[in-house]
Length: 613
Image (tube, rainbow, N blue to C red):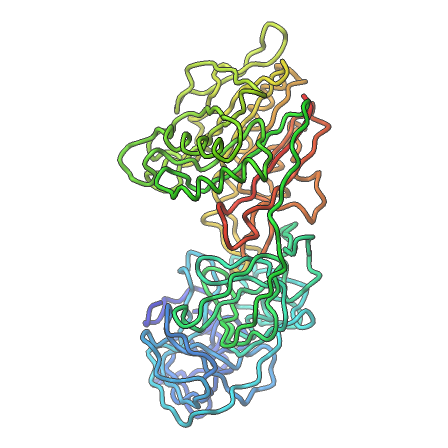
């Protein structure tokens, strides 16, 4: 975090101009300094997201230290115990010191410095800004004082409406709008930015991650599912009770607790309310509750019956031979025990044979063999594999990793129809065979790889299989990521989701190909599956299904069970299997073995569909 003033956005400049017009800032030659006799923390925070004193020098602002951070963005929070009675103005603020602070919780201090609006992640991220005092001079007046009483964040205090509509005149920004903390959840949290807050016993909805943070909900009933998560079911329902939890205690002094979704963070968790790049409003705990394990178990799907074909998709998260054998073994065990050894398994994020080493290697035979050997060792079938190697560094993902989709299939249950000639740049097509059935010209083959929709992204892998004498077409996908989208806590409301444009084009290309198969044979069994990187209610999914070509099978599940990924406390759909009209009678299972757990073998849950061709 920089110690200098962050360049002002248009909204910040507008806030300053408004403050000048209102007489809140001096307009004479000494306008660089606010009147120290009048300035308190609530004056700095103001009743909008931008401080009316941004860029100004303040002197001897009084308050009591409520939290000290000695790692990462070093500094401390302090709070005025004499509140102004305005619910829209926070009484706390962060002081960025840049080095380990010399103050302690309970110190009464006077702080002088520059009022700054810092945007975590930079202005291009769309994130809201954090009001700070930078380049501080701190005077300790006394020590051992009681910290200001915390504001309780609870199901009754957080509004059900998420955010106001952004101002059209400000490109949809909410920065210049007066806060309405009793109407909108984002305004409520913003009105407490930097203040001492507390939560009581709360359910964990986002497992402990590698960065020592977890997510809870203060609203027990909000889109609760049977396993303890909070389901994200539409763009309008943002689950307002979610809150990120971190600890102010360095990990070397006290390890952060491990928690899974559905566990309970019991007792009182209390500390300043921060805003950061990777989660927005965050309770930085001075006092951390105790995690109670509720015993969440990894699911197991049932085995397919003799006449059923089981098809699955699994994102194995950048798997390459340099990964420890333990990861291969754990993934293999999941295929055998949790997925019941599906007949066809489409894998995403299989890397090349030396992983992220960027030396031009594109083959993935060693990666695949290490995985299939591990499956055999776990008691599973001797899967065969089919794939198409990508061009070097043309498919996105980790540079040098060359991730791609790979088909595994059990040759004792299903056969693969090989038609040679498929490579990174040659498209497969569809023809009508002698018996009136559709057939691929290349199998395995890539769909329309020259299409601009697939630039720096994985090209779909199409394969033709045969089960009990009937052809089955499987198209494995890994659509473009959500990278570049603004977060749910963006100052633009609704947030800009720029990545959707590419996925929409990708979905249209796949839909067109599926329609070609169905034109050749309207009864063809087609499965489109993989890491679609988008929700079941998204425009991407609607484009895949356009014209009745496909049905999103996840919609056959109750709404509470529709998820394959947990992000910032929201259980949501990213991985999908879609079926052609001929596949009417099927069973679908989102097998929850990773996303809800702090100990993950991948960050995605696999999906399994069983049907009788």
